[in-house]
Length: 419
Ligand code: GDP
Ligand code: MG
Image (cartoon, rainbow, N blue to C red; front, side, top):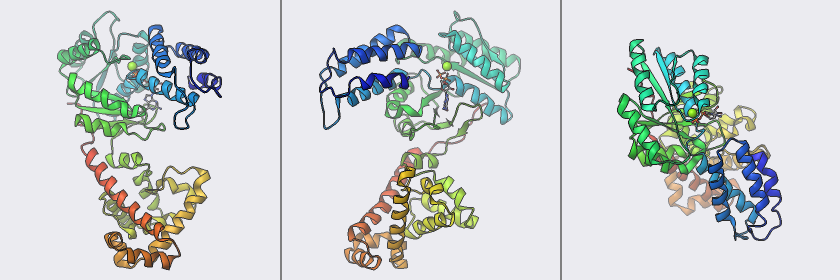
C-alpha cells in the first residue's frame, strides 16, 4: 500500500497550500491503492472524504510542508481504519492453539468470523499447519451459535481448550459489540482476550477501554512486536483496563508467540534496547552471577555508576561495540552511522565515571546535591560541568522511568489458560 502511495505525495511537492484541486490527483491514487488492498468501497469513500476534509486549507505549519502534513493525515486515518482488521486475531488464535498444544493441552479452533469466507479458509489452513481441528459452519449461522456448536463438539471429543476466532470490524460499532456479548453469553469463556496491534500505539487506549467496558476482557495479546513500533500500546492496555497483557506475537510463523515480559517491554518502550538480551550477551564475558546481579540492579531501578561502568566495560570486552550498542540502556536506537558517535560518548561517560570516588559511584545523590563535586569530576576528566550534570541526570532519569514502567506493567504473566 505504502509504495503505491509514494507517487501520490511527490505530486504535491512545492505546493504552498492544499486545495481541493491540487489534492485531487493524490487522493485518486490513494483511493486506487486502498481498493487494490481490498478495502471495501464505502469505507474507501469515507476515508477519502475524511482525509480531504482535514487536508483542504492546510498550509505550511511550523516548517512542516503541506505534502508532509498530508502524509501524516493519511497515516493517522489509516491507523484508525485498520482498527481491528488485520491486527492478527486469526493468526493469534492458531498460534495460541499451537502454544497450548506444546504445553500438553488438546485444542479446538472455532471459526467465528463469518463476514469474510476467506477468514474461515485462513483459519482452516492455519489449523492444518499446527495440526489442530477447526470447527466451521456456513456463513449464515450466527457466531454465537457457531461458538456453542464448537464447544459442544469439543466436549464430545474431550478436548481441553476451545479457541473462538471472532470478527473485528472497521469501526467499533454496537452491532459488533452485541455480537461479541452474544458469543460470551453462549459459551461463558474462561478468557476473553483482546488482540491489539502494537503498531496502533496510542490508538490502543480507546480500543481497550471500549472493549473492556462493553464486553469485559480478561487480558490482551499484543501482536506485531517484530515491527518497528516500540510497543507503547502495551502501556495503554494496562493503564486503561487494569488487565494484563498475556502473550505477545513476534512474527507471522506459528511459533512466534511468547509470554509477555514487562521488563523487556519496558526497555523497548524507553528505546533502551533489550536489557535481558544485553545480559545474555554480557554472560559471554562476565561471570554468570555478576551478569544476573547487574540485571537485577537495572530492573530494580537502583543501579549506580558502578553498574553503568560494568556495563560499558563488558561491552568493550565483547569486542565490536556495534554488535551490542543497541542493548545498552540509554544508548539504543543507534543507527550504524551514529555508532562512532556512540562509541565516543561511551568513552566520555567512562572517563567521567572513572573520575568519581567509589562513594560517588555508589551514591549518585551526592553528585546531584553538590556542584563542587561535579566541578571536580569535570576538571579531573577533562569534560565540562554540563557534561557531568547530564550524565548524572541521565542516570536518575533512567531510574525513575524504569521504576514507573515496571510499576505500570506488572501483572503481565504466563497465562493460566485452559482447564
Ligand atoms: P485478523 O484480521 O485480525 O484476523 O488478522 P490476521 O490474523 O488475518 O493477520 C493479518 C496479517 O498480519 C496477516 O498477514 C498475518 O500474517 C500478519 N500477522 C499477524 N500477527 C503477526 C505478527 O506478530 N507479526 C507480523 N509481522 N505479522 C503478523
Ligand atoms: Mg481474522
